Length: 602
Image 1 (spheres, one colour):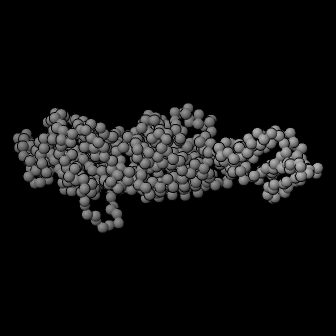
Image 2 (cartoon, one colour):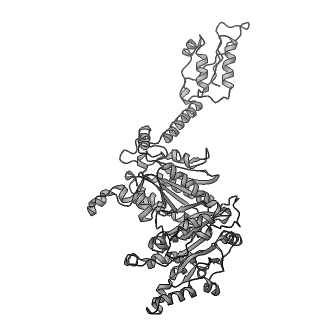
C-alpha cells in the first residue's frame, strides 16, 4: 500500500488507519484520501514528508525505510508510512474520476434539455419523454438502452460539450405493459426539439431490431420537429433506415405510434407505416408541408391544427386511428389496446383471458334491437356489445367512416376482430372511407392470427359522382381483396340486409368464410324489393309485384337452400354459435399459395 511506518503516536490511530485501508465499504471517499486525512493528524507528518526525496511521475510507489542516525541495537526502528506524492496517477483515483464523470453524464441524460425546457413542455400541457415512459410501462420494469449515446456532428457548433447531450433526444428501451414485454422509443422535445440525427435514428433502429428478434410489440412516442438540419444528409439517411425497419417489422410485430407533439416532413412516414396511430388534441399535428409552405405555394392561410391536427386526421383524412384529450388519456388507451394484441405473428402469443361470461349465454335482447322495417336505423355497436365478453370492445377509428365499425373484442376470452356495417350512418352503405378503413383492419387481423367476426347489414355501395370520381371501384376492391386473402377463422352473421355486390364483399361464403349465419329477418338479394320490381316489371303493378318479390326473396331461405349460409339462427343464439365455431377453428390451417406477394389494388 501507499504507506510508510511513522514513528509516531498512538497505536490506536495506526489501528484505525489500517482498518480504513482494509475496509471494503463503498463510500465516495477514496482510500488514498482516507489515508491522507488520517495521516495529516500526526504532528510529524508535515516535517517528515518535506524531507522525502522527489519521485518521477513514472516511478511506482515505493516503500522507504529510514533509521535514526543515533539508533542502536537497544533502540527500536521507526518505519514511516507516507502517501505517494503522485496520487493523481493512482488507479483508484482515475476510476473514481470516471465514476464521477459517468454519474454526471447519466444525470445530464435524465435532465434532457434542462429545467427551463422541461417547464416549457409542462406549460403547454405535455409530459416529458421520460414521464410518458413511466406512465406507459408497469412500475419499475423499464430498462433503458443507449442512455449515453451522443451525436457525432461537428458542424455549426454541435461539437461543443453543452450540445452533446447523452441520449441525443430519444429515450429507448424495453419493459412490461400489463406483464408483457414491450419495446419503446420516446422522443424528447426538450433536446433539439426532438429532431432526428444519425445517432438518434440508430437508437430507434436498434430497439426495433431487438423487438423483432424477440417477438415483441414496439411503441413510438413521437414528439419531433423532423430531421436535424445540422446533421445534413446523415439525418435523411437515418430516416430511411427507420422506414426500412418499419417495413421489415410489418406483419411480424405490432407497431404502434402515439403522436404527442409535432410530426412534420419526412417524420410523418414512419408512423404512417405503423399499424395504429393515436394523436393528442391541441398539442400534436402531422403534415408533410407546414402552414408557411402552404402559404407560400397556395397563398392559403391555415393553422397547424387546421392543416394536420388530431381532429383532421381522426375524422377526415383517416391517418389517425383515434385522438385523446391529453398525454395521459392517450397512453392509457395504448395500454388497453396492447392487452388485445398478440406479441408477434406467432399464433401462440395471442392473449387469452380468463372469462366468466358464459360462452353459451343466450342474448335475448338481440330479439328487439333490430327493427323489422329495413329503412329504420339502429346502432350496430349495440349488437356487438351484447354478443362479446362483458360488453367490452376497443373501437378502431370510431370517428372516421362511421358507417362501418371496426373493433377489438373478446369471445370466451379470445381476442377477435369485429367488423360491422352501421345503419346509423349512411344506412350502412359501403363507401370509399369505410372500405379502406375496414380493409386495413382486416389485413392487420389476418397478419396477426386474430379471428374475424363480421356483422352484415349493408344495402350496397354508396352511389354518386363523388364516389365514382373518388375511385370507389378501386377502394371497394381493397375490402374485397382483404377478406378474400384472409386465412384466419372468419365468421359472418347477416342481421338484416345483404344486397348486391356488398353482400359478396362482406365476408360471404364465396370468399371462404368458415361459418355464415343469417337471422330470420335477414334479406339477401341483388337489391331491395321495390327497386327490383320496378326493373323487372318495368313499372307495372309495382305494389303487388314488390309484395311478391319480398315474399320470395326478402328472407334468407333461398340463400340457405343454396348453401350460401350454414344456418338460419335466432338472434339470441348468436353468441353461442360464434364461441362454438371459434373453438372449432382454433387450429384452422389453409394451404399457402406459392407467390412472392399479392398485388392488392392500392
